[in-house]
Image (cartoon, rainbow, N blue to C red):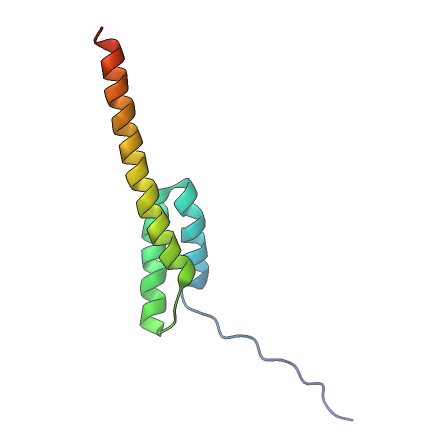
Length: 85
């Protein structure tokens, strides 16, 4: 009788899970998402493998932080304009 062939587990990609966590946190806490995505991208780069979720997390975190700054400036200017009358 022959032994059943067991498929080998896929090799773990360094930073892949951290990249996914960074991508999710980019929507909730952009600064934390940016930090984790950068760490994940550096881990994957050191291992020589691509990490798309980390790259997307970096881009989205930057976009959301810029939008947050723009919105907060607009709200501040708007509230100051309303209270000056």
